[in-house]
Image (cartoon, rainbow, N blue to C red; front, side, top):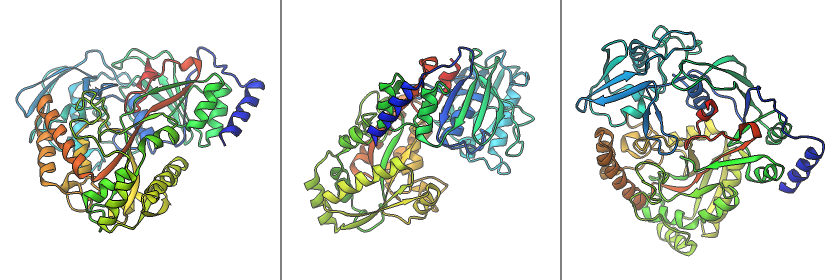
Length: 495
């Protein structure tokens, strides 16, 4: 298949498919799937999050490398004890309509997000807020009901105009980002550059175009009709594009692809059997072949660039088990684990990945039935506990408190306050560490507790970390400076 692509690309190049974009034209970004919506109060999919963060802005934004919160709409902030945060807004900021930003807009947005009537999926991020008070033309105070260490990261939530914050879903919303929506259809979103945001006015507009077929995306890029294809080109196609003059830009990604195991199923309830799953998988081979080297074997649940890890791959825990198929075979035999079903999405690359994982598990003596499912159907089965193994990805590891969402016993679907502990793993000691880390805003105490939690996760292996996929973009010459953030956001389009 790769040779066929190379032959086709060679013919395209000979026919004159070379980048042609004019200097003043908008930058065109190609994606494989459309955003679910462009309302930042409701969007949760990756494309929707990336577009809304171009058109909207929050009090904070995340550092492109470490993902620590930095002031954005806020000029500065300071804690007054563990329950009160004083915020000063940047002067001169305006919504796309021209309306000036004030503290009343921030408070109205937070009140609307907290309202059960709005039913925002981001409601949990503001649940700890007791009140928001304006204290001057640019000053406000956020008061918490209880300590919440993640408040500054949570304030990445976009701020809306006070009279629109509680508008029904689907309403046109005024934004504070460096772009504004000019038009939006199912397959094309046009964004205009604007001033008045926390960033300088961008030099170009942006067109986000949905092109579902990979060959069509490559054709459009080679013909000079597109400029950025982020994380939507397979490794063989990337190599062929690069051979024909397309720049490929890569940076380490803050994501995690992992093998999920149902910790309450016979055989898989044994930590030794889950360690056997890790020992059966040659994760380095998966990265070199399936990802074409565009990724890293996961040394932990968090990427080493996270401020928790400080560059350490194992992030405070013992190293994860290495490739040892005979040890895996013994672990499966001792646990009485002989046959499992492996779920994956129907995405072509994920199916290929699942087949490779199934083959490696089979080589270690475990019979595997592979079952590709529509993503929505698969997630429903996982939440219902109707599975044994599954391959999943956390696309944006923006905040280490996500560990609580995925591994705290209260986050087991149907048993607590909401969460995605689909492994159904329960550990009182892990719960304690994650609870304490979510309450103490101090950087060093949080780091110590998360590193201790990482040590427990490495021992118990409720899921098997596989790799962190790189953020890879194919770029035209006009977009050569594009560099996504570690979690894949596109704010560099504004620069």
